[in-house]
Length: 171
Length: 69
View 1 (tube, rainbow over the protein chains, first blue to last red):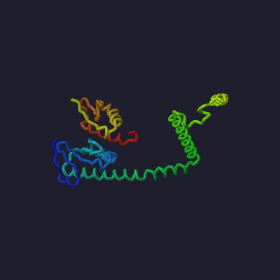
View 2: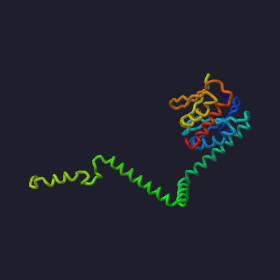
View 3: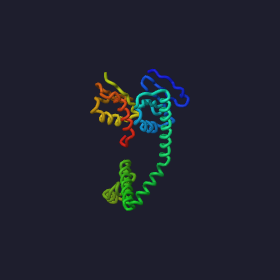
View 4: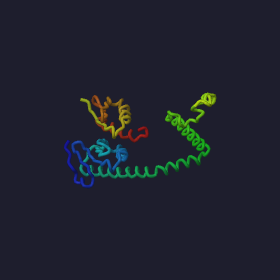
């Protein structure tokens, strides 16, 4: 595959493949997470054919081919620049979404609680019961020596009686 | 000669590629081959639309963005 670097290589790390009318963009995996790359790629699928390859932790190579066919160096530069901008946009949105996730969950839960507080209370009660039941089941399963059992549960009344019936003088 | 497109499992979930293969099953003969570190979409025959392979890749990306993935 013959490819040449465009003049704008210093700005955008991309290459133009004139024979296939494709532009290839290398994305650093430590700067842009895969979700951001995928998000940016998704916004381009209406105007370009997109193919991704590489290892997300290291780098991802994005191949773009415009759907209208031809691609000259200027068009390649524009397409690569637009993709880089969209990539930055997607990465920023992802970061903001992660930062505000707890706040969003809180707002939604408050909105749901305000809409129907009785149902919300019942749901919370049910969730607490489920958590307690699971905890009890787990504690029983992880207690092979019966440490959490009471004395009566562990030894029973029969054994108590048998012990009390034994000869008190016998040592 | 069949056309083979490689999908990296670290980038593309297998479910997304599978759903794309199911969606394109009517227009082109496609089967999936899984190997360690690769999912191959193998296209047999001559499709009417020459862009079908690129459309397939776009479809996979769209599937990756769907809530099911």
